Amino acid sequence: MSGREPVPLEPAAAQSPVPPEFTGRRAVSLRRYLLTGILIPVGVLIIVNTASLYRQALAAVNTAYDRTLLASAKSIGEQLDVTGYDEQSVLRVTVPYAALEAFEADNQSRLFYRVSSLSGETVSGFAELPFWHGQIPMRPPYSALVDFYDDVFREEPVRVAVLLQPVASGNGRAMAVVQVAETLELRKTLARKILFDTLWRQAILLAVIALVAVVVVQRATRPVRRLSAELKARPEGDLTAIAAPDSPRELLPLIEATNQVMGRLQHLLDNQKRFVRDAAHQLRTPLAVLKVQVQSALRGDMEARDALAEINQTVDRATLLANQMLALAKVEQLRQQADLQAIELAQVVRSVALDLSPLIAEKDIDFEIETAPARVRSHEWMLGELTRNLLHNAIKHTPAGGPLAVRIVRDENFVAMTISDSGPGVSAELSARLYQPFSAGDVRHGSGLGLAICREIVETMHGSITLENRVVHGQVTGLDAVVRLPTT
Image (tube, rainbow, N blue to C red; front, side):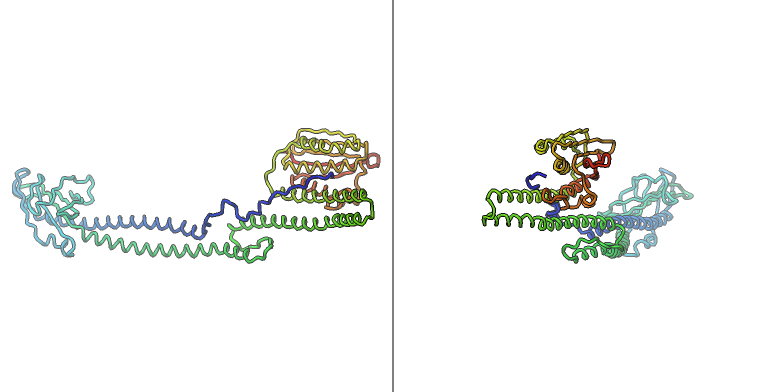
């Protein structure tokens, strides 16, 4: 190949240890996330459940005490007497203390009553107790004409039971309105007791759930912590696969992905080491030769012009070797990138042929090119480097005035590029190690890296490359380099 400028290597993305979007961001604790995700909904549910239980308990308390209020109202209604009928009736009542004793025995709640006619005229009791202006429910909770409601009496909230009590005697008939009001101290005390009993039971339940959640989350995240500790304990440079057969099923995709990443890193590291080793080994020889040539020229062992010519040849070979080693390293770097583009192969081939046209003209080669539209997914640099290496090798091995042809054909799935020279072909011994680095047939005119670069590029594009002698009547008439690549 002709000498070219060194191929620049792009900085690897892996050099940045922390992606910029994660810098300055506080890491989220998985255990805290799980605990809050479990305990907050449970706590909200317990609060809602506690409120619901409290309302149900309060409703049960009201039902129980309303029944007692109704009993007191009925007891008062039994003491009524009447003279006259309907609008001309006169009600009389004598309420004994025993009728109210059951309510005042607790010394907490107080009881008030009022007996009135349907028109609201007070017959007995506390006249300042507001008269009832409601109506009896269509379906009362008890087998009586009774209504219950909340009111305020003497600036205190009270619960009132209203009973429409028919009154009849031998001297008359009428309808009485019996109201019995009770202050709410006892009800509130009982409701608070029920609430506190419910709260501490719910608190114990929440504590048990929290303890269970902490233990379960701690045990569930133990494999993650163990795996993290194992990775931290690894020596520097250890990229062997993680062996965690007892890990939970949910961690296996992460472990598998981590092993794949570590495998790629190991591959990159091996390539880097190989590059440094090969560079140190291969560049040592031309540099040593160059040093000897310079020392020989300084001693005057040869003419200055001859010495400079040999030094120039040595520098050319070293430059070619360095360029191709950098190209091989860049192929490996581009292999790790996923930004492949659809590129027109015919356009790249014609551009490379135009660049190498001085070499073709210098040997007066009968050059023929035949292309067809074919787009492949690749990096433009890789496609150009592949074509340049193959075409340059073909030009080098084609005798002066000999034919050289480039053809591109395609089918539904693949495109085939064939470069046919008229050289001596390759021997069976050389074909076995043809794609190995530094195994060129003539090390004085090549580095032995061209075909290795071509193979790496073709494999990166998921294609294939073959070199076959073209035989006519038992004689080798040239070499066909065939590259098959998948089309877009």
